[in-house]
Length: 120
Image: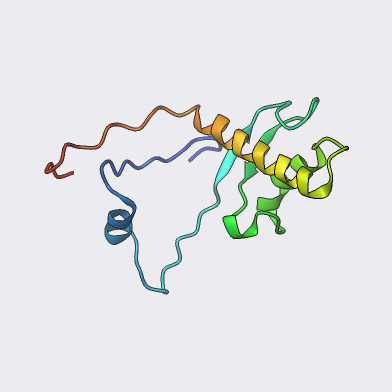
């Protein structure tokens, strides 16, 4: 797969539980782990910022270390200087949500699920 290309699998009509039952495991021997990345447009973080591809932090490590923390820390640094630390963190979290929404808006809407009683 060339850089920038994506692999997409359509599990149309599968809910989360069905996905894990058919494609994953519920035991501790199999760890489902993926790095989720988004594209951030130039200037989206701050004026003059180059943008790029960023790994998203895991929920439990939003303010942690590692590659998933780079984007949230850059957003914190770009927060208005007059904000206190807690307000600046909240501002960074809101901007992160906005960037994720902007990234996801670039994808086509998923197909409608099959009618009830229709197997995939």
